[in-house]
Image (cartoon, rainbow, N blue to C red; front, side):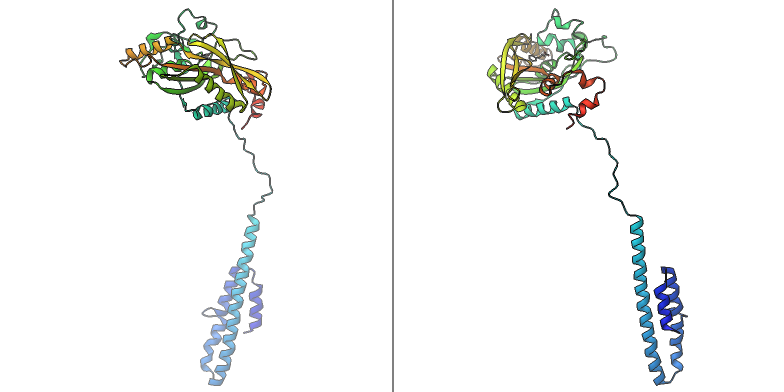
Length: 353
Ligand code: PHE
């Protein structure tokens, strides 16, 4: 057997299979070297010693060569695989379009954060409302002009759905059905169900039957606040609105109240915020001290439900304003229709958070 030739074969083997057959060919049970080992017995002791040493040395070299070649082949296979499966991280990836909150949702969350920090709970009410909660309960009797066809989306007398009161009771006998024109009905619903003192804030969609133009939409969002307790005063209202103004426009913000009329407050005041950065007043919404007739309507309802009257001797303040209006003023947006009409994504994307 030519050991050197065998070693060259091993080194030249191009695959693991070829290498395996070389191993069998030389070192296998009937391999060349194995066969030569078997002939040792027929030699003289001296010859055997010399020949044995030679064969053992040859065997050691072959084994080492086989092992080295196997390692090299495996390494090469691994490199090939790595190259074949390599990921080109410099290729541009796929851009998945990402969503974002609508500007009005963002502002709503900001506002709720400010009121939560003042200890208000956030509560929500139904958008399809009963005439009673939307109007009568907040001291807007039948003759009130806001009930006109011009302002309110009236619904067909509900046959396929029921309007529920605060305890789930059917209130179909308390007047017609409508899309709520403000979030104030939630004042009445909440007070019927809870006893003072409490602080709440009510975000929600409201609807007005109007011609839409740059500053009017038939649907918009309001934020309503209500605080009731034994000694709540107008100073508390001013404090809360001031805190709101600071939260929105910074420590230098100021507020201004001017007397105005809303049936459900007495006295009533519209409020504006001083936007120091721009040096102007932003006329934002309405507010005032809860009208005694609202408390009375609430207590009458509670009594009807078998609950004790809970609002005699209580006072409270309330406010309400439109979130879109705040957005328009704050960002100098020229047209309220940008928010919901014409699918103006290009507009909304500018405010992506
Ligand atoms: N509900 C009134 C509106 O929609 C706003 C308001 C709420 C005014 C609470 C005073 C107190 O215009």
